[in-house]
Figure 1 (spheres, rainbow, N blue to C red):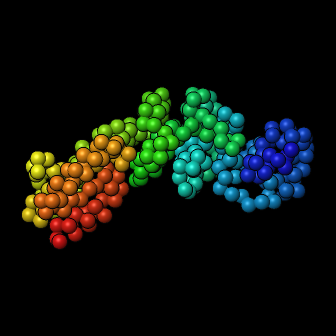
Figure 2 (figure 1 turned 90 degrees about the vertical axis):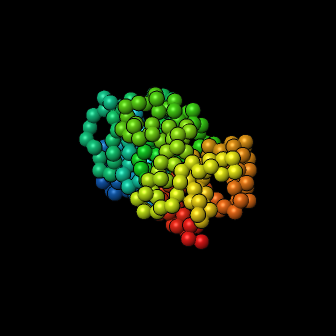
Length: 287
């Protein structure tokens, strides 16, 4: 049974699991003394006959805080397949009444989580998907919006779930930043993106543009009348339903038929890749 625990749990086992599998505390100590097992933290061991993988590191870090601890933030995002790379430091959420010192390589958040905000994946307690998306996006900072956008586009979580989870966990670390992201995802991204675009143009010293420029019965977000370049700003990529998509294409075609070049940027383009946006605009107005 111990071998089965080790196989299923990345080579990590707790003292309680070892006892449940029939090993005595003396047997566990003997494994540690003989260096067959490595002690990761109090009551958590790793069988040293295999590589100490990232999965083993995350699992051992979480189990080191007891059976009520859960992986959260970027650690939970990696465990759930939302991000490609594991974080250097494992974020662990523990109940408020938890005691004990902080272990190396971990970040501890003390908060009581509702049952609905916890799930078990491959034997490890982690924050539920919606809470993971909301918290990990804030931890990513520069490209956190991309994580939210990807989760919504992939339909692995609904915007309504993200809002409900956020409101249920108000006051946590990063809550204000998460609220701003969710507001953008709820429809405020386009107007915010327009303000960001104008700010980028001003900071870059690019002139000759007008906002809300009338053309072909439409108002162009930002237009360069002389080189005939129209810039249209979108919100989050997932925000386009079929009808909106069709209307945007009809609008774009009519503008193009008048001899204008149309550039389209999303909120993500402007917040994550501003230099690329500016380079594209410069190339268009010089053409």
